[in-house]
Image (cartoon, rainbow, N blue to C red; front, side):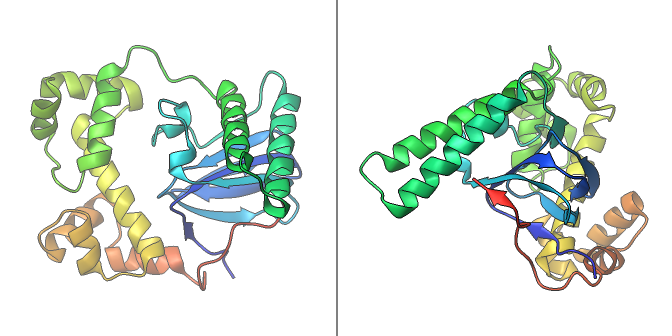
Length: 257
């Protein structure tokens, strides 16, 4: 039986301490080994493929707990990377957070929540400190990516975004090509396809409802769009993605902070 596909509305941060396995996030598989950090942001579909032999720390937290401006708040931030520098400090931060969280659950006091939030921020700063830095000089792409993330269901036209952002369509295409190797139009389409895949793999909704949420007026146009970019009809993709996954499951067992 395939592991369950999950789509949380909160952050899932995994810090691997030992063992090997894998996790699939938005249909891309990531290897888990000692020192791996996985940050699954809200809305991403994921499946823990092979984690029976993996041990580490799992931290679950709401989006509002991420400090404003933090790299972790970037919906396009990295999913998986290896720890560098002094990983022991990440372990210490995670362990301190876990201890304070457990203490607050047993005997809370007026400052419990503030302490837990502060220690979570320390942990996220440590985690972000060893994450791969974003490429420099890509302000235009960052603005475009944020706009597409917010409005992909409203428009799939580059000119629409260019007018809103004050860039020319050519500038957006050049910036997007340099950042991710795709044209500005392909970037929008990729985001629409990704959302459709997420809905079909996890949502258990009809193709018509999926088309509506993806910004299409009718399911026929959506099906044509989806098949041209994936090689599968929406129904075939849904059947393949869900397979025998069964009911939606929980995050994997292990030590949690």
